[in-house]
Length: 243
Figure 1 (cartoon, one colour):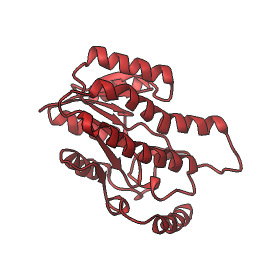
Figure 2 (cartoon, one colour; figure 1 turned 45 degrees about the vertical axis):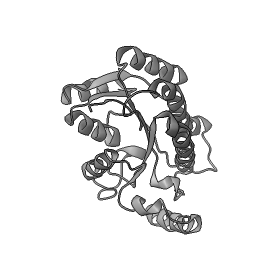
Figure 3 (tube, one colour; figure 1 turned 180 degrees about the vertical axis):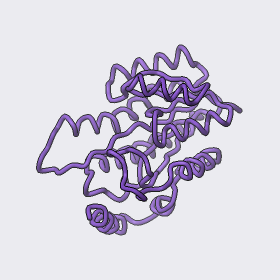
Figure 4 (tube, one colour; figure 1 turned 135 degrees about the horizontal axis):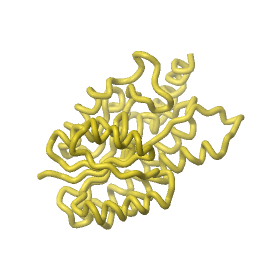
């Protein structure tokens, strides 16, 4: 069957790469973003792509986004919570507004949208909520403590959401990316991170299966490792990154 898919943060990076693949596969795809000019350019570059202007870090925008989708795209059966930001943070120099914006975007928004869309999706064919977390949910990044915490929170929430919705006919999946060569966190160093197209090709193939947790590269094995192993890895990884 063909789906109607809403992807938050679909203007660039992982969100756009997945949007393109769903679109090329004959699905109706809606992306939302907070920059109107970028949304318009993305739509011009990808004929058929639908757009909604919304800043998911804002509660009122999330409610308006849900109401718009419910009215204008009532066949929507897949929600992909992808929007996210990553900031390098020294906890001794706190900027609470910056921390709060990261929490609102990465944790509050996908939780709220999941709650809004869950009853709307019940009863629809191939209904899915797909949350994009991170390998850093399992290996906390010393340079990005708020990001790691929000993604760990989303991993926990996704697990519970899956179990609560399982018998209601809504499948809940989790995409667990490694570092991917996108502009998250201001961009990655040259050669750092997986190629976004290779990542998206692999993830899209897995999303068409019954897999509930979809990794790529090291995150495919990270899912099943012990907590202590992951903490040791986190320190080593952070030391390499900070060098």
